[in-house]
Image (cartoon, rainbow, N blue to C red):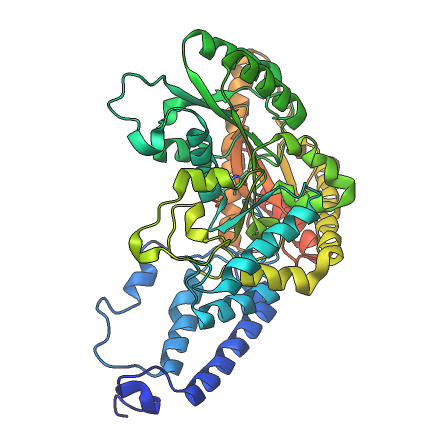
Amino acid sequence: MSAHDGLDPAQSGVGDMDIEAFRRHGHMVVDWIADYLGSIDDRPVLSPLAPGEVRNALPTAPPDDPEPFPRIMADLDRVILPGITHWNHPSFHAYFAITGAGPGILGEALTAALNVNGMLWRTSPSATEVEQLVVDWLRQLLGMGPSWSGLLTDGASTSTLLALAAARERTDLDVRQRGLAGRPDLPALRVYTSEQAHSSVEKAAIALGLGRDGVRTIAVDDRYRLRPDALAAAIEEDLRFGFRPVAIVTTIGTTATTSVDPLEAIADVRDAAVAELGHPIWLHVDGAYGAALAICEEHRSLLDGIERADSLVINPHKWLFTPIDCSVLLLRETQALSTAFSLVPDYLATDDGEVTDLMDLGVQLGRRFRALKLWMTLRYFGADGLRRRLREHVRQAARVAAWVERHPALELVLRPEMSTVVFRLRAGDDGATGEAESAAALTAVDERSRRLLRWLDEDGRILLSGTVLDGRHVLRLALGNLRTTDDHLQRAFAAIDDALAAVPSR
Ligand SMILES: *Cc1c(COP(=O)(O)O)cnc(C)c1O
C-alpha cells in the first residue's frame, strides 16, 4: 500500500479539502458523534489512562506527508477516546454535571464553518447582533430589567475578571490610564466575597493587580451563605484602616454546596458602605451554575435583589446544556465595560455609526461566533423545554437526597436546593469517647471517604467528586446531564453501595 492510498484528490495540492471529500468525511464525523452519544453509557466515565499514555501512543513529530482522513479518525478511536473523561456521560456526577446537547454540537460545527471573527460589527453583523440577542433572551428568561445587556465570554472566570475590571474603573483612581504600580497616592483596594466563593474571584484579583491580599473573604452561616453582618464588620474595619472597597462578589449556587448568598441584605450593606465612603462599590453576582434555575418561576426568588447589582455571570455551558465554552456576562450598564476596555487603533477604526463593536467590551479582540450554539440551543428546546429539564434535575437531586437519608452509612450535609447533592460518610459508633479519640475517628472516616472516591474512579461506572467542608471530607453527586435517567441513579446507588462494601472502615 502506497503512502497515498486513501488520500483525497486535493490533498497533495495547495488547496483545502475538496467539497465532495468534505461531504463524505462530514457524514463520517456526524455518524461518529451519533454512535458516540448512543453508546456513551458503556464507557468508564473517568479516563483510566496514566500520565503520558496519550502522548506516547502518538508520533512525537508532525507528519511530513498528508494522511488519509479515515486513518486520522481511526486514531480518534484508538488513542484519543481512551484518554477522554466523558463529561457528556449520564453517570458523570462530578463537579457540576453538564450536557453538550445536540443542537449546540451542531451549532459548534456551523461556527467553525463560518469562521467569523466578530471583533467589529462590520466583520459580521450577525455575530454581534445574534450575540446581543441571545444575551437579551437570557435576560428576559431571568426576569431582569431591560437596561441589562452584555456579552459572551469563554467562561465565568473571564466574565468575573471583566466585571471586576469594570468595578476597578468605576473608582476615581484612573487605574486604566496610570496603572497601580509606583503610586503612593493609591489606597489598598479590596474586593469582598465569601469563604465559599469560587477561586475565579481571587484569580481576577491576581490579574487586575489587586493581589490575593486584595480579596477579603467573609465568613458563612450554617448553610454556607455569606453572612451580611460579617461583611458589614469587615468593610467597617477596612474603612477605618484606609482600605478602599471596590467590589463585593456574591454567589448564587456556590461550587461546593450550591448555596445562595442573601443578595438583598448584601446590597443593604453595600449601600450603607457607599453612603459612608462616598464612592461606588460594585456588586457582582456569580451565578455561573445556579442562576440558570431562576428561569423557572418557582425559583425566580434566587435573583431577588438583582436590580441592585451591577453585574451577573451565568454559564449556559453549565446548566443550560450548551457545549463548553459559553458564559454570559450581564451588566446593568454595559458602558462600564467599554469605559474600562475600549481602545481603538487606527487599523480598526470604522464609521459604521451606532453599532456595538464587541472588541470594545473586553480584553479579546478577535472572537468566535459563540452565540450561534446558544441561539440554536435556546430555540431547539424552547424556554418551557429548558424549564422542564431543570425541574427534572431538581427532582433527581431530591431522589438522591432521599436515598442518602435512608442509607445507614451516609448522611446529607445539607438539603439540596439545586441539582447537586452533598453528603458524607456517617461517623460510625465505634466506641470512641474522648475528644482526641473522636477526632482520630473523624480523620479515619475522611480517609475512607477519599479511598471510596478512588475506588469509584477505578470502577468507572460513575464519577463523583469530593471537597472539604468544615474540615470534613464530603462527597458531591451532581445532576445535570440530559441523558441521566432513574436507571442511572440506580446505577449510582449500586456503585456507591459496592464501594462501601469494598472499602473497609479499617
Ligand atoms: C464553575 C464556576 C465558575 C468558573 O467557571 P468557568 O466557566 O470554568 O470559568 C465560577 N463560579 C462558580 C460559582 C462556578 O460554579
